[in-house]
Amino acid sequence: MRRDVVAWFDVHARDLPWRAADRTAWGVLVSEVMLQQTPVVRVEPAWRAWLERWPTPADLAAAPTADVLRAWDRLGYPRRALRLQECARVVVERHGGDLPDDEAALLALPGVGAYTAAAVRAFAFGRRSVVLDTNVRRVLARLAVGEALPSPAQTVAETRLAAAWVPDDAAAAARWSAASMELGALVCTARAPRCDACPVADRCRWLAAGRPADVHAHRRRTQAWAGTDRQVRGRVMALLREALEPVPHDAVAALWPDAAQLARCLDALVADGLVVREDAAGDAPDPAAATYRLPR
Image (cartoon, rainbow, N blue to C red; front, side, top):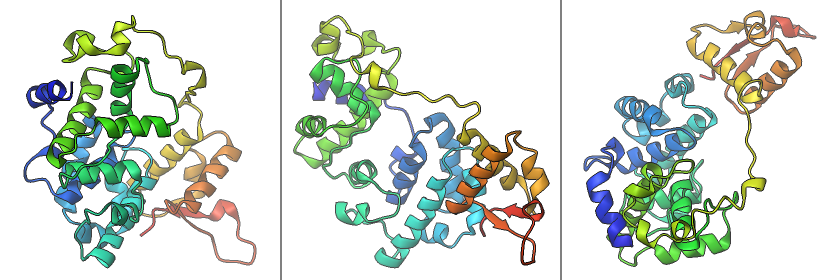
C-alpha cells in the first residue's frame, strides 16, 4: 500500500515551491508555519514573497517587527509571524544561522512543536520521522482503522500506528510522509473523498465497510467566524497594517460596535505583543486619547 501511494504521488504531486530541489531547510520551516490552518492557495504567493524578502533566518531576525506583521498580511493567526521571527533569532544566536536537523534542537525553537519538527526533519533533511498532520491522520484512520475521520484529539495509539507505517529507510520514510499527506489533501479529503481516484481504494477498510459515518462527530466543535473575537482582532490588525502612523483610539473604536468586546480584543493583542498601545502623558491617561500601532 505504501508503494502504491508513493507511486501515485510521483505522478500527481503538486509542484509546490517548498518541494523544489533548490528549497532550503529554512524555506521548508517557513512553509510549515504558514500552512498551519491556512490553505496552500493562500500560502504559496505569500511564501514566495517572504523568502524573496527574507531568505535566511538572519534576514528575518534583523527585520522590523512591523514589516514582518505587514508581510504576514491576511494569512491569519498573526502570532505565528511573531513566533517565526523569534525562531529566526534563536537560530542565529544558537545555531549560527543554520537550521538544525536534530529533533531536540528543533523542538527547542520558538513556535516549533512535534509536528513541525517532524515535518522539517522529513521534508528538509530527508530524515525518518513520524509526520502526522490532519491529512495523514485521516488517511490512516480510513485505510488502517476503517473510521471516517480520526478522533478530535490525537491519541498515543494513533501515533504508534502512524510510526508503524513509516518505512525504516530514511529516504523512503520521507517520501511516504509526503505522499500520504498529499493523498489526504487531494483525494482522501474530509468532506468529499474521491475514492474512485484513490490508488489503494481496493484495500481501504473504511470503503470496504461501506463508508460508515463519523463516530466522533458528537465530539467535534465548530466555531462560526462572524461576531467572534477572531474577527475583531483581524479587523484591528488589518487597520494597523495599512497605517503609516499610530492610529487614534476613535478610528479603532469605529471598527466594531461592541465596545466591551473591542476593548477585550485590544487588551489581548497588546498582551500578545502584536499591538503597541501608547497612552497620552498624564497621571490618569484618558483611554480615548490612546493610539495604537504595530511593534517596531
